[in-house]
Amino acid sequence: MGAFRMRWKRRRLLWRAWRARHKLTLQQDGGPQIPDQGVLAFVVLRNEAARLPYFLDHYRKMGVAHFLVVDNGSDDGSVEMLSAAPDVTLWHTRASYREARFGLDWLGWLLIRYGHGRWCLTVDADELLVYTGMKEHGLGALTRQLEQKGRRGFGALMLDIYPKGPLGAQDYAPGQDPSTVLPWFDPGPYRAQRQDPMGNLWVQGGARERVFFADRPERSPTLNKIPLIRWNRRYVYVNSTHSLLPPSLNRLYDGPGGAAPSGVLLHTKFLPEIIVKSREEKTRQQHFHTPEQFDSYYDQIGAAPDMWHDGSERYTGPERLVEIGLMRPL
Image (spheres, one colour):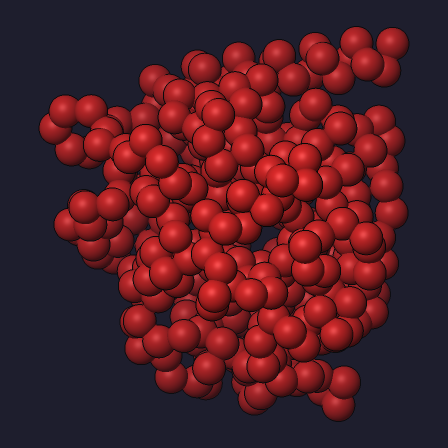
């Protein structure tokens, strides 16, 4: 019965993605000019003009062949920037991000239409994937190694990086490496457990739990993701990139300290614009299944706390993350 329910759920989510295509408008004339080879990146964003220059440069250097981007009503210059990039295909929608399963229905359709049989990287604009050997071996080499080992995907811990001093007090210029402004992270503790019925991992802990959810750790953010998958049109993301169907895909990542090869998604949420963005997102109510329960979270961010503490560690690169067990090389 459990397997039947999971099949039914997968079909229902795929149908939602199929219907969601009607909410998307292609920005350029003609069809997308997507290369036949290489890793494709799939992104939903809104008002990320400050992050986009470095984000695009980071993933281009890693070997992303093309970006398939859904813009959800940006008015800060993001659309103009993306429209001018030859390796970006841009869709637009003003539909509700929350009602589209936080953008998963839109990306689900693009993955069905363009991702089948391809290695696909699904990330947010504030997530930068890092892994061992990335400077010498790009995503093409990584995916070839994964295929040689019979692996269909690559998991990652979402690692919050943050400044020392009050949030919002730093300076950041578009195109700058965010880790130079947000050079600190929590090396632990992190905890992981498997959840029924999908067998998906649930990792919590780290900086946001310590600072914002110390009195309610059960509500702290989920930190496990499986962002890189050799896609099949029968696959579907269920909750962000935290979990997938069929359930076997959730075994691709077993968390910090696990045996599966993995990377880290540097989470650049806490750039100086975070104060203004948090106030706006509290008003928009487009994040979280029960957004009203997280008003205090936005209020705490708006109070500009200093997230640094004596246990903070400076980020120096992927090798250190391997040493402390937050990622594992192939």
